[in-house]
Length: 119
Image 1 (cartoon, rainbow, N blue to C red):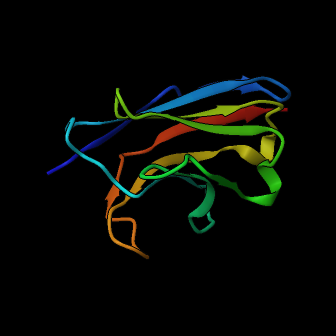
Image 2 (spheres, helix red, strand yellow):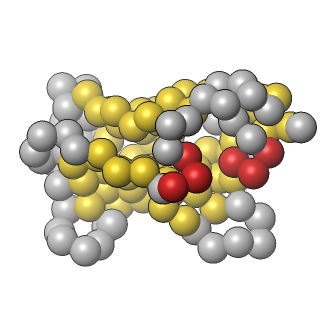
């Protein structure tokens, strides 16, 4: 069973930056899409960003992170990263890495990493 392991969360002041990383445990794991989601207290989990893993690396972002967050991948290291700049208190959430193997479903999820942005 493939495991996704996130790292890089923490506490940062508004306007600061953090970089999250997610590593897949099996080198042979080749999903279609890798993505980041987040869940704030009392809210549902929401999409943040995704990258097309099995193609040309096309990316997509949620509207409220466009221009501030950048998703990138290193297929040789089976790692996907999320560079988060100009962080706002509203970005505070648990951030999850996810992988999509079959169309329409994210079958694999990491355990989550906490990001807290103070004002």
